[in-house]
Amino acid sequence: MLQVQVLRNNPQAAKDKLAIRNFAQLNLIDEVIALDDERKKIQLAFDTIQSKINAASKEIGNLMKQGKKEEAEQLKQEVFSLKENLAEINGKLIFIEIELQDKLVLLPNLPAEIVPHGKSAEDNITVKKGGIKPNLPVNAKPHWDLITQYNLVDFEIGSKLTGRGFPLYKGKGAKLQRALVQFFLDYNTEAGYTEYLPPFMVNKDSAFATGQLPDKEGQMYHVTADEFYLIPTAEVPVTNVYRDVILKENDLPIKMTAYSPCFRREAGSFGADVRGLNRVHQFEKVEIIQLTQPENSYTALDEMVAHVEGLLNKLQLPYRILRLCGGDMGFTSALTYDFEVYSAAQQKWLEVSSVSNFESYQANRLKARYKNAEGKTQLVHTLNGSSLALPRIYAALLENNQTENGIAIPEALQPYFGSKVIA
Image (tube, rainbow, N blue to C red):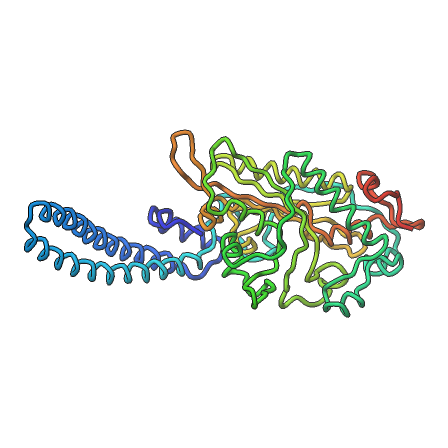
């Protein structure tokens, strides 16, 4: 959530930045500032009356000590009247604060200076490519055919158990999934990230704090009886570990990693892009998260991008890194880099990771703060990234490594899978 003071300092600059996102409701900024002006007036009236009540209450005590009961009683009546007035003003203050909050949460994060203009994924900028695309035979198979050939995943039984988009991994298919998760976690913890295993459902406060609510409410599975939400990513519960926490500066940076299943309704998805493992409703992902001082957050972002790149190099997958344009960024992000791997059999790029700096946007909702060297309390910056997301990694590994003798397993993954090939 944006801070009101940021909008007040330079409303036009905020509008210009939101225009990069193609955000249409720029008038919200003026409405927020007007509401904050009104809030300040009401707060001043509240504080003035409260001051009068405090002074009168002190005077009543003095009058009683002096035996001036009649004057004290008269002053008590005045205090009673002031308190009635104060209650009315407090009601107005609560109302205006709610209205202000409701407007603020509709505003997305301000994009960083280097975010390119653009409306969709076609306008994203490729900043780097790595790895080598494999030369597959003309009869190379897409992963959904390889899955059937090697009996790795059963989509039909998964659909029977739950519904379409809930795959059932089995045998070597389940083992490969487990090997990837363990490999990702070990890679992250060796880089200094502390491992967490969070709850897979969160309450409304947690979903709001990281920006899933109200922006993505329709994309999350909602357990209405208990008012819980199935998590779309481990980012949600793990970042909320530090909700309403004031850290010491020497606690930073905080680096966390977590495995979790992820649940997404993916409403409106259809066509070839959803075939096989390309887009499902439940999938596994390992996440990395950092909390840092504001001045260090973009260094941390570069570090996290390099970290994910190193992981893809270990898997020997061809990849590209994209800087997302304003129109393709997530609601809460100030700057996002997407990683895509090349699926040789499908001859297309598949997104497998997003690494984002949220600056203070999430932290303002979380009330995640720290005390700096001068003792001043300020918001941390939060960052997160997929490290990595299955199942598109899974799909690319199968397709890119298919041979006449089976699916070759990358060397770095072999100790976890226990074999060099799926035959």
